[in-house]
Length: 313
Image 1: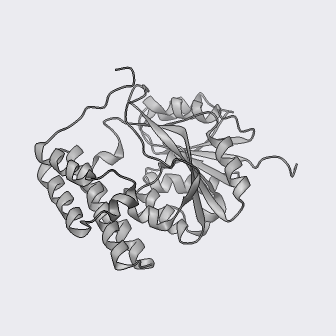
Image 2: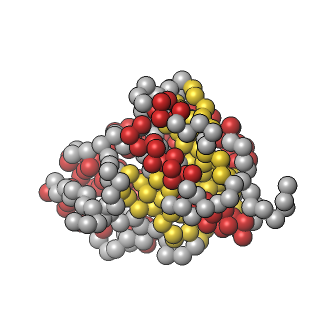
Image 3: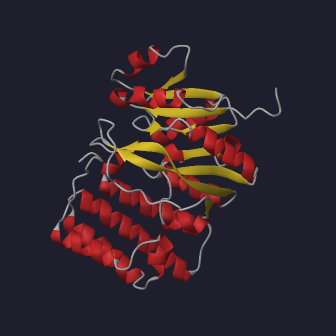
């Protein structure tokens, strides 16, 4: 083995009945500029055209088939089966930009073993793959993502991450008892032991469509609160920071309730957020503008909903 050669990377794609999007995900993984790429698709018991589609990639990708055990279990299977020391997780409805793996692998090489994960930013696309005029907040420059950052909110999508395989195996991988938010739970547990970082580059495209798992507001909010409570139980923080973390969680849930047309519950969550942390500290924590929660509350009260627009509109 050439000691100067870049380490190989396994791109794990968990797939369950997403045949209409899966080919684009696989093609984006195969198109990476990094020289040593393994594409590993975990077919989590699909009953659509996924098995037939995967047959067309014979010799170009690896496929592991299992019973339908859920997203966390499929990712864990990919983690165990990965043939390389660095792993990326690409959701079956998302796409990677060609230099995603190369840029993040180079970043991890520069910062050294102390950092277990490098993440990027992402753009949004619609069901047809057209870019959406929906902004994604991210860092202005490369920097560390701390445990406190992750307690306050989600900082990156799973499809933007490159992580050291051994670090995740040491944690037992994703929590298979969590039906949602299992990625944020794992990043929080990882941040309790290792360091994480994020670059400002947009290196992935996250698809928004009617079948997104994040559409279930009740389940998402329940899991968000559970993940936060578990993290605070493992490693308590100051009372002031805990209030801001819980306030941020209620704010996130308010938006989910709003998107699910649960007006009363959205208003209630935003009011809880304001009651827990009424001052400007949370605004600074989240890098938001003045009055961001009051504007959100007004939108929820009025029931105002924006339809996602493509960049061409």
